[in-house]
Image (cartoon, rainbow, N blue to C red; front, top):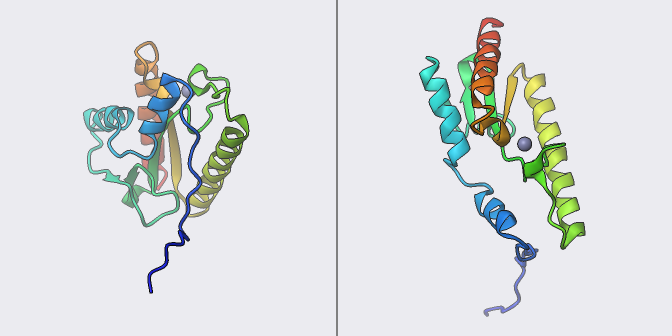
Length: 155
Ligand SMILES: [Zn+2]
């Protein structure tokens, strides 16, 4: 007998209250986002190709991973990961309870994943989306290079 009962009812997100929120929502969980592509290109240009994408054998499925070197890079969207003090992390004014809860959970998960990875001996490098804007990208490239070099010699 067929049941019409929907047991998989999902909690639906409230409608986006602004264009920026809508764009951020669309950007969530998408593969090959522009910031990620920018970081991948940086790594290749620095002479570190050979990364794996979305590495599923460790917690958090890092966007970019060098499993042999136990090093990974997370490209963090400022909105979704609630980048503290960042202008791109502005909170939607409507449905604030929903968003507060969502951001709180995202941050909790981020912290847990980091702790788990570090326990496994991994070096975790974060690149925030805002660090890839034109005025900061050179600085970010230098920082990434230093972090990667440091991570690679530690083993
Ligand atoms: Zn930011």
